Amino acid sequence: KRVVVLISGNGSNLQAIIDSMERKEVPNAQITLVISNKKEAFGLERAKKHNIATKYFPLKPYLDSKTRSQFDLDLAQVVNGETPDLIVLAGWMLILSPNFLDSVKAPVINLHPALPGQFAGTHAIERAHSAYQEGKIQHTGVMVHRVIPEIDAGETILSEVVPIHPEDTLEALEDRMHQTEHRILVAAIRKILIPRVASSSRAEIKTFDNI
Ligand code: GRF
Image 1 (tube, rainbow, N blue to C red):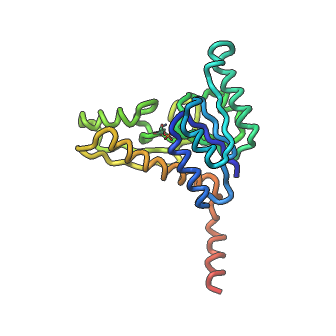
Image 2 (cartoon, rainbow, N blue to C red):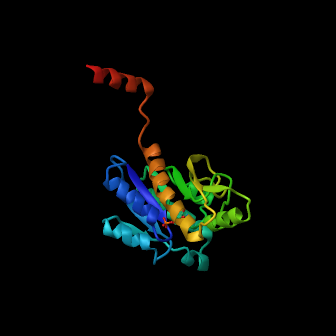
Image 3 (spheres, rainbow, N blue to C red):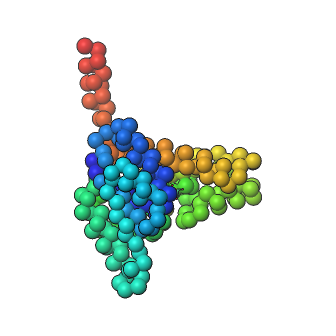
């Protein structure tokens, strides 16, 4: 199974996917390309260290001459060139328009550090931390969802509550959130890439075991 990962920054979630694949937790799957819109994204270094192909694909040249929609179309071409089975947005900070989503031929999933319907957009962890301090929420969470044109709103694949404690600094909450992100993103990729064993065949396996 061929996976393309889009990043914009540190790439700790990319690292979690790389590590899980090396541990064979996602059987017969490999990342064939990591794309970043930021040249200095540390995630590019992480990919190179694991001999994974990388591509720097900046938005800026499109803002000068062409148009934003051309960026999305050209990005889709690069992604399709990998004939991926899955496209993962892991800390990708650009909004992808229908130009991209309708052009790519594989499902697109996104990791977002908030629960479905909460804190869509950027700085979600910071906003949750403030909302907690104002007594508006008791916890926050992380979700992986299918990407549709509406921001952070596609069908939820997996989500998990992340507790917030009274003494939590923003950093403490961020650390806890990232640990959950790494785990839930790998679980979501497994859920999509590993075909569910039909219940009947599981029964057959059961009887086989009994022989
Ligand atoms: C993560 O919190 C991710 O959910 C958000 O940006 C952060 C990037 O993390 N979109 P990393 O680049 O994977 O470390």
